[in-house]
Length: 241
Image (tube, rainbow, N blue to C red; front, side, top):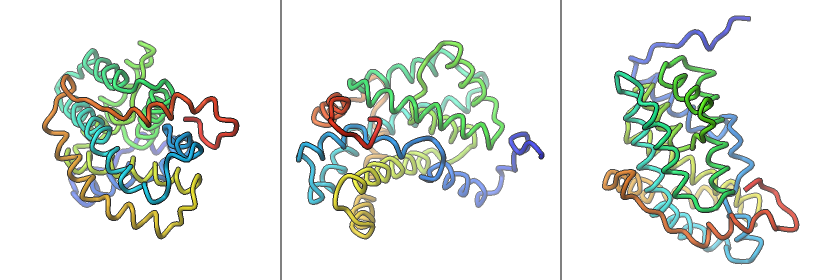
């Protein structure tokens, strides 16, 4: 069988690159996102999050975590276009994003998804910055966070920066909604309605991420951080985080 990872289709066709982005942001991409709730399970089990709260809750997530993740997604996107891949900056970027995640469970979950995402991308496309990023993180035993990996892959494939950030945030919100569907009496139709109405919030969060740098961005979601920290103590669990 031919090694398909050795052949990379041309990226000068906008229709092809649009399909690349759709595939990267597809929930079917095998990175393990299905196994993480990032603290939502604790809130649901504790009666602190109801279906009626979801749109407001996810909107607040976008205003805080969504903006912060967008900042790091953009920063990683810009690294891919540099003539010489900046190894130290790549490691610093991931360390800085990890520092914004006080809950170990959420931090580890983000790192697991990021590492898996980069591996999945390398399996389908052959780009030097991606190989260098993976090798540097492996040699330094460093984390690769999901937002950074998504931004780097998007930049290496010359995908539009703004569209990449919006796709990443859309994927993230859809993943949280998917977790809620397994935890709450939330049907497919209601979940799709919530995701539909959150699209302006996704765009706003993506746009707001241009107002900050990785040095001054902030994220304050104490209830969700508490939920992630308490998650290992739940009597029964559906999710890893």
